[in-house]
Image 1 (cartoon, rainbow, N blue to C red):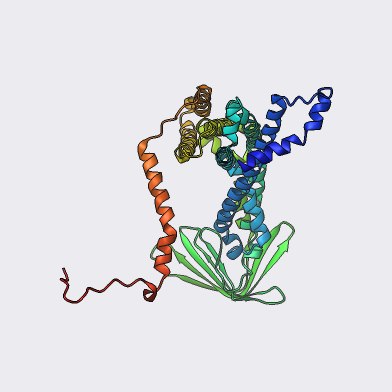
Image 2 (image 1 turned 60 degrees about the vertical axis):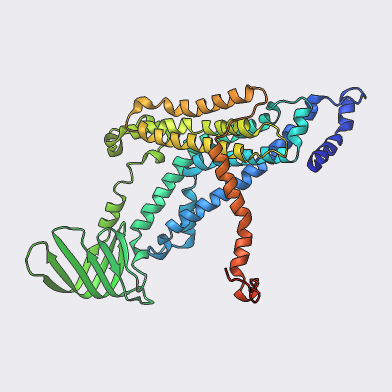
Length: 445
C-alpha cells in the first residue's frame, strides 16, 4: 500500500490546478485522476520496456560479436569494423526482440501494480481493466510503429551497408596477408601465409596455396613479395620462389622456379564482389520486393521468399498489440496478494511465445505456398481477438492446467532450497554436524 499512498499524495499536488479549472470549487473529477494514473502506468511500463529492450539487445550484440570475432582475429580488421558489423545486424532482429521486450515489461508492470495493491484499489473504486490498458496499448502502438519503421526502412539500409562491409573485408587482401605467422583464407580454397613483414612493406617467407581449380593444385613459395597497386588493380609480385603444381590425375608434380612472378589480385576481388548486385530479400526495400528486377537469380529460384518477406514486414507490427492484450487478459485483473499469480504470468508468456513461433513457422510455409499468406495476419489478430473477448468478460478465474502449476511450484521450491544446498556443499567435513554415537550396551540395530 506504500506505493499507492505515494501516488495519491503526488496526485494531490495538482489540487490547485483542478480548483482553478472549476471556478474555485475543489472538484477532483475521476477523469483527471484516471489521466494521472494512466501517465503513471505509462512511465512504469515505458521504463521497464527500455531496460529490458536494451538488455536483450546487449545480449544479442555480444552473441553476434562472438560470432563475428574472426573478423578481427583472422581477417586483420580492427575492433571498430567488428563494432560496425555487429551493430548493423541488430535491426534485423528488432521485429522479434521488441515485442518480447514489451511482453515482459507489460507483465512486470501489471504484476507490480497488483502486488502493491494499486490494481485492487483501482478496481474497488469502480475502474475497469481498460484503465491500465489504455497506457499499455498506447505503448504497444508506439512499439508497433517502431517495428514497422525498422522493417521497411532501417533493416534494408543496415543490411545493405553490412553487405558492403562484408565485401570490403573479404576483398581487402592487403590487410589479410600482412599478418605474420597466421594462415588467412580470403575465400574457399585460397590460403596465404607470411613469416614476417619488413619495415619497408615487403612480405618475407610468403606461401600461397590455391586449390580452387579442381583440375590442378598450385602452391607458391617465395622468399619475398610485395603488393603493387596500379590504378584499380592490385598485384602480388613475388621474387625468388617456386611453383609446385599438381594435376588431378596420376601425372607427376611440376616444380617451376622463377625470379619474378606476379599474381593479379583483382580476380579474387571480382569473384568475391560478383554477386553484390543481387540483393537478398531482407536487403531490399518494399518497392524492390514488389517489383524485383527480371535478372535477379534469387527471385527466379525462389519467388515465394519475396512475397513471404513482404507479408512478414506487414504482419510483424501486429504482434506488439497482440502481446499487450494477452498480458492484460491474463495478468491485468486485480487479485488479492494472497493469491498466487505465477500461473497467469506463465500462461501469458507461453501463449505469446507460441503465437510468435507459429508465425515464424507460417512465414516459412508461405515462402513455398503463397496462398497461405493471410494466415500471417489471422494469427496475431486472432490472438488479440481472443484476449479482447477475455477482457470483456466480468471478473473471472482463468483456468490454468494443473500440471503447469505443479511444475512451477516444484521449481520454485527447489530454487528456495538452492542456497542451503550450495552452502552445505561449500562447508568442510570438519564443520559438518557429528552424528551421536550409540551408547554402550545399546543394540546397534
